[in-house]
Image 1: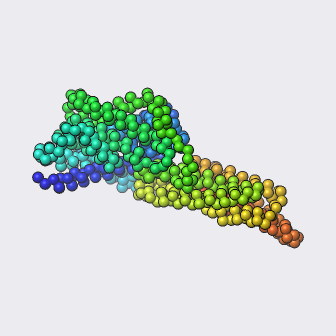
Image 2 (image 1 turned 180 degrees about the vertical axis):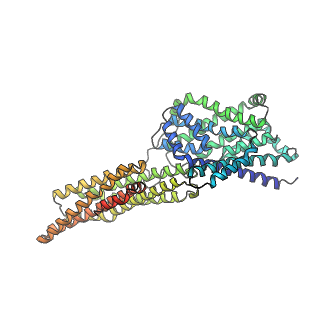
Image 3 (image 1 turned 90 degrees about the vertical axis):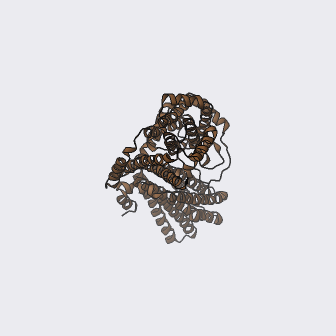
Length: 553
């Protein structure tokens, strides 16, 4: 019998199943992404709360990978300990089983209704939330339709001798069945899809229950492989303790499950004669048992992971991105969070440049000029990496708020890079000019330069805070700082023209240098304000009055 057409049909139905899963996940992310992240972040204070939060967020997203990426972001930022983060992953693994439980019942008849409801909601104008919920309903409907098609396509070939021979070979070696399922899960990036496929095959008797259970064990292992093998590359393996820890406990659970597969299969079939329901129950019980085993042992387990994967302290390239995880691009809320964290590294580099420039101006340290100029290359490379990362996101998957947030991050990083250019191309050459010519500024001028440079650092830190909090009051305070630098420039301009009127050549040269330095600092401050304050004020409607006030009009 020719298998080519049925295989194409099964492959198409599997693709439809994957696309339905994708629509459900992206719809939930668009509708509730920030709130789910807030729920997850707020629950990371105790292992039980973290477990329940991981379960709930993953049940909504239908992606333990997305939950893991959000949790890994909290861990890498030092916001949460490894123990509750591991508890989140245990909860996430249980959360992925809930959709399998729901689909193990005969719910295929609801597929047209779900698609119809989803279409009506999706086409309804005016409410982005309703639009995204429509996407979720359509996704569930397509998943049910795909499973129904797979069962229908497999039915005529259940007794085919060649298929029976192949499945018999697989069934005789449970480890091979687990390996095939793990490979399929890794390739498809969806344990939900693979488990649902296995349930469909079990429902038609294409695979015996014991083989189905082995394949479910493999799917559970495969879903833990993706974050480890496709996570951010780097020399410091300690940043991957969470994903490696999750993989290790899954590996131990799968090994124990394969060892006990025969008695467990007999017990499951006795308790639940329906093969599809038995497969779904086995999937859930495996993850619940693993969570019950590891939850009380997470503290010593986390300590073991720290010993096995110690943090490496090495002189890393400061221009190398640390948080732009390629694996996070499938989850917009996580990818945007990673880009924002990377943008904060621009603040550190620019602050180091300003500190070096101040030392060069006040203390006459020539080495600081060369060091500060090297930091401008760091700013350029990080800004370029952030832009490339954000441009690689699928913009069709971004909600209106996601697009706004992406624009804010781009504006922030671009302005800080431009502020670094002002330091490199103008402020530092003026400092070098002062050292080369041996110009001595009056003490009051030197004190004002020091005060204004320190004020720039304070404003820079305020802009970093604004990028994360988006607080309108803080934005207005930062925008008002432009008046301080404008007033200093006005006073310096008057002093310069007074020196020219008196005809004192030494005073003219020093006042000209002083005026140039103040103009540079004013320009740097302008970029700092534009980086974070103006996007917030534009959203709140305060931008025009603030700009008029800061420009003196």
